[in-house]
View 1 (cartoon, rainbow, N blue to C red):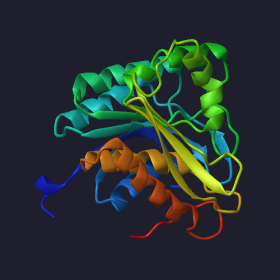
View 2 (view 1 turned 90 degrees about the horizontal axis):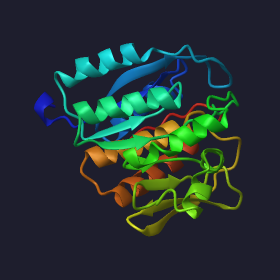
View 3 (view 1 turned 30 degrees about the horizontal axis):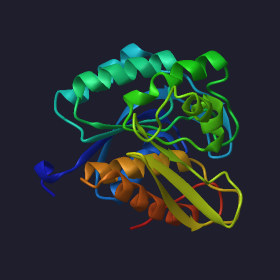
View 4 (view 1 turned 180 degrees about the vertical axis):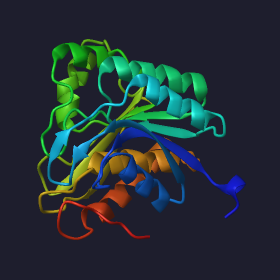
Length: 252
């Protein structure tokens, strides 16, 4: 394939040596859809698919340098942000991305804790600071725990946020109960449902990373957000059914 025909997407996320989460998982998800994923590293984590030991944060100055280097040769149609150190670093990253890639569709997967239970955002101050940033994104993809921790529902009830109008939100249903896994997209004043049979078992490492990256890939390909979410949901069903253990491996 000629380079000029490649479709690119960017992930700003952590390094996970197991390749089950973080930007390695993101790039695999993007490649599944025929999109060339490129990455900026926010943390050199110490983990495997079963245990998270330490984040080892990359400074914003180093994150900025990585972004500047890529911006010299590339413009991205879609960008996803994953693991970040704090609300203040997230704010700096968003500001930089909008400066370098003003037309990019910006997705944030709000990683409050790792799948193994390691907590990243723990204070009420952090959640309140993040709330004010949400309208800066085109799409936010929390699970139910992240939605509750960030206080998005409470803020919406108080008319402090207009979810689905100020920004789109995909509320993931993987941690809910029932025979169906239902994701709900708040989009342009509507609520759209994406459902699939719930897969039994303990789940997979890096599901949130893979889903948001799959959405980013489909947006980069020119799909409207509802279709991108639908394609990502189908991908995640394959992801969750890809064998035993915590690592997923999806073939085309």
